[in-house]
Length: 287
Image (cartoon, rainbow, N blue to C red; front, side):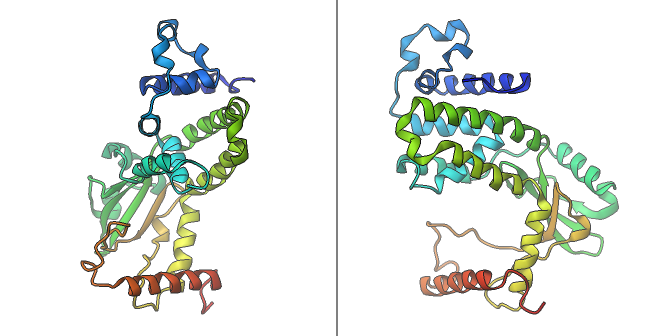
């Protein structure tokens, strides 16, 4: 099977193999017939290629180090216990937590380039410390000169270029998995990558996300239970998403509903009603 198409792809594939080896995933490298991409010094010890019981954790650590594309793939797979074993879902779910942020100087450069103006011409302040950081972007709190407080989501640099290169490699690896791990053919690895490509390419254009937020904002603007932020379109581009800042608490399986001053029944009712509303009204009901 042919390797990736360009020099950059081959270089990135070698980097991926090196990271997998670093995290004791030599078994996977050998099984996929990629051992030849390792330096000779790393190929000679048989114990480096033995199957380890800690593989789910080691694979999650490798994904973290490999960056945005692999973190997003791990996040997607963590929600699919129908496709991968539960121990992998549990481990990959740790990728849902905050990712290491990038320096503010890079964020400032991206925002100013996208909005065509210096930050101090737009904002009274722009907090240099992010309030959240994920694989593709990070969020900063800022205040406009009219005193409106915004959440500014900024796409991290070179994410799209890295995604395009990694996607070529993921298709190649999926083909190798289908060839060397026939027991996985039922889940159709290449189809998973195809769906992942569609899902992630939409996330790389913040105007798509902004349009979706806008629809939800209009659908729920009269709701007393659900608050959706309003998009600030004049400060939104493909790489910058500006929206109304709303204080809130993260809800997950470990959330204390008493602290939220809501019963399980109330929360469930709100979720069901919001889901039905979203299905019935793709656009605002009063439009």
